[in-house]
Length: 211
Image (tube, rainbow, N blue to C red; front, side, top):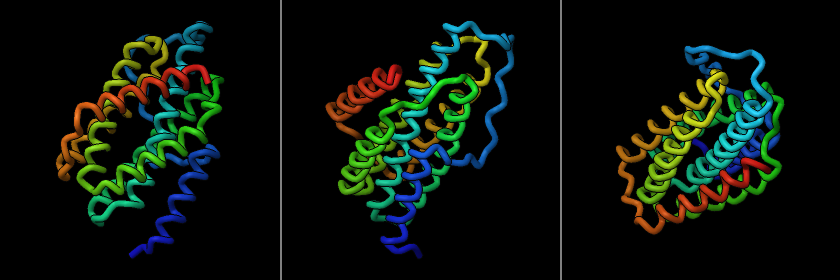
């Protein structure tokens, strides 16, 4: 059994790995999607792919913070274990998106420490509200992230099969996390809160596209 101090140290270690770029994926990078590819993507396509993958990387930075904070404050061991398992899959996403940014010659967001801190605070608030509301936050977040990733599949250059494969696998994983949260007893998130979450997400994605 882990003590509260153990869990706090684990969360601190996760934060350091997330922000230092040393997170390691347990699963290999997704296999490229079938289709034609251009080994020398146009410069404009490469910039677009880099910006979109930076946004996705920020999403994974936020996911690490949210899940770590919610696991810290979870009241049920079963819910805590579920959050920890989801965080492990999100670590794969974090490592994949960072690797893809490197391959595209692009960079992570300069504001990652700010994104992490803000998301960790939100995760603590959600967790302190109780497990049903914490799970509701997970379910709604993952639903919105799934929609966001689907839009990126529409926007990524057709020739960038590597990025498309990563985003497609991320979308599947996020949908599974949302379904698991609902099955575990998530409450129904009120509509005004869903709108607020969507608005905050738009601010983050718009800013991360450039910064």
